Image (cartoon, rainbow, N blue to C red):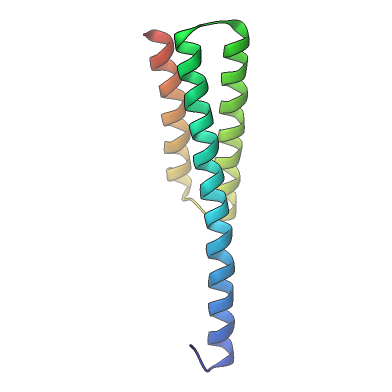
Length: 96
């Protein structure tokens, strides 16, 4: 454990940031899985309601990714790559 006051504060800040980053990353993973399962359901049984659910889940996941990028949890390119992967997954499912 650090003895210097500023080092103790940095340890506390690092822990706070770690927990915030963990929460954002967990939420992104959860929303991504929810989106992927809705795309699979849509691919198995295409319907306007299922497509609407897919679009809503994509919007939620992309929004959370954007917020994580804004907070510095993800790098800008990492967030863009994640959103691109989500969009391409839907594109492949619709084409198949």
